[in-house]
Length: 147
Image 1 (tube, rainbow, N blue to C red):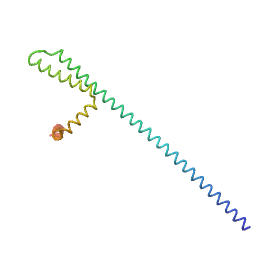
Image 2: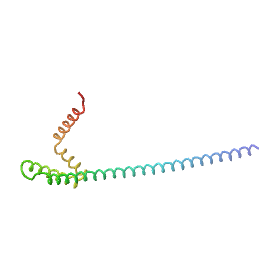
Image 3: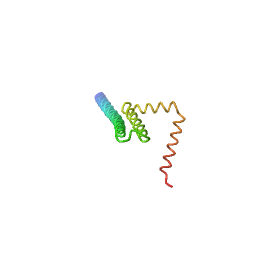
Image 4: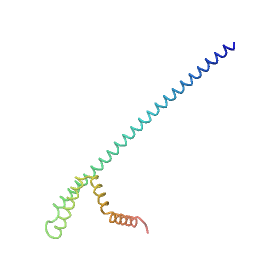
């Protein structure tokens, strides 16, 4: 009888151990599945964010090109509707040339080209760039404070 009781305990322990192993395996499997789904979701979110940033960048480039085209169009309008001679003719011609060259620059370079040029200018001339920034900040502060 003692032998039967001990063999029953052994069978019971092996069943309990087997059930514990099954539960552990199921938990690991569920954890791995959840981790894979989380990684997949994070990847999808990252892809969508990258696509949205790319679309926003493209829209900014398109807007910059549109501004450049508008500047060139305005230069043509100025040339058509202003005198060609005299002081006013010289001034309007200069304004039209400046608008046209600025518009062409914006159309060709786009926003990224403008940012690259601005970055290079600040690197070559850090002190004047800093002073200009301080001056603009001062003017903005004066314009926005109430007396």
